[in-house]
Image: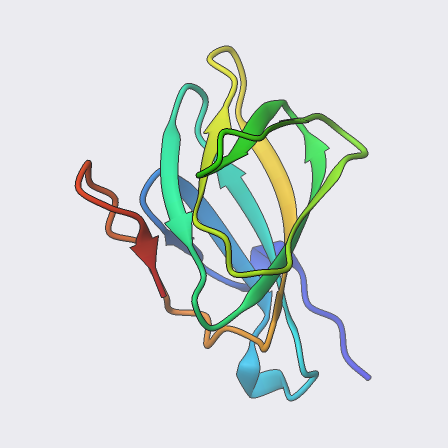
Length: 124
């Protein structure tokens, strides 16, 4: 058994925000947990080809959209689930940061970052 605080791990700059990777592959739990902040007014084109991801909103608001145009609003208490490695657009509202608890299976290493550009979806 152990505990770990967000203050115990460095913030990883992932492109349009930060991620405190609280549990990673080296912890041997079979999944990873991160406290993710998406900066207000940003849009991120993301795709996880090796990991499934579920994100639970703890504060702020925004939306997630798949490549078919299905738009899902995000607010505190809402979880969005990427159970098919879907490329997606993650957007934080213009007036506030979006804060999420992100769970990855299989777990991420913890040092991953995104390369955000207009040409395609950032993957890892």
